[in-house]
Length: 104
Image (spheres, rainbow, N blue to C red):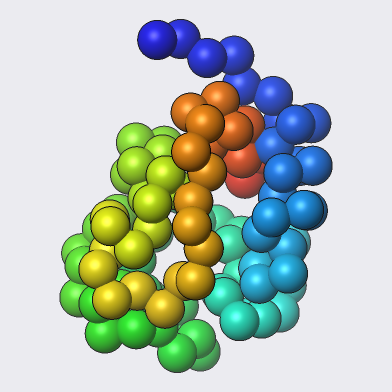
């Protein structure tokens, strides 16, 4: 399947479903979840001033389009015992759009 990625749709999804727990701006504050600026290429659980779950810190996951695509479908299935309390984006297109926004 090929999905066109929309930064605009991703931004709207982020603001309605992610922004209550995450910021994305460079230097943005942590909330219930960590700031997501610079996420791609980073290993999960490695921002020094955020209290990640042990499961997240020990996952060894490097965030890229593929790992984030899988994670965002069902975070608790991808990293069991994660603190992220989010059911996931069931639609592949929604996941692609949020990834496009986070990469922009």
